[in-house]
Length: 274
Image (cartoon, rainbow, N blue to C red; front, side):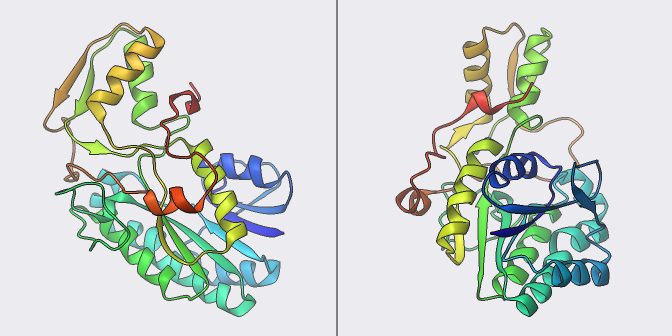
């Protein structure tokens, strides 16, 4: 199978690239850093993006590229819209021309966090611009019949909250853990789930994330598992935040758990690269 992968240098992109290249031809697109055997393309250069996709004629497109820095999205709204939403529109346009199957990765931040354990049918209501830009991207993706939107939560590998906790505690420093819940998943487990999904060619929206946990509880687990020094403090908000965060953006992944044989649900702290 010929697969085009955007965001190949990101956490999920790196894991997908390693996994999928074992049995498939993977065309890797990246923007910010070097990827062996990849193509550097600015996703906001929309004519170039469409032309590249149409010429390469992939059977499957996996869009993991995104502007994910929540506060940066709040400040640089125009750029966030172009990367997280408008680029998806142009990926869809090209997908239609070549009849490619599209899997688009989205986020739990499309929800307001007022109830948690959100199902696919729940109505999105983002509380920050990152969530809004990703929701608009979802709308563009779902305008194409042969697409699947995979919502996930707190992806980590070489960065993310679990890695921050590990490194900070290891240095004997204090960790500020936001008083809120989510469903963090390692990039490794998410990649395994996506590999299975592209073979199933499911469409619509699907939640793929791990168990619901508070950041405070997760920090305690990491401290205990690795026997780390350092203090953990639960806080209402983190100093320096620009954008509001949802209190409980955890996802209900029961549909995906019934559908997939991959155990993506069990929290995989070992999935950190530190």
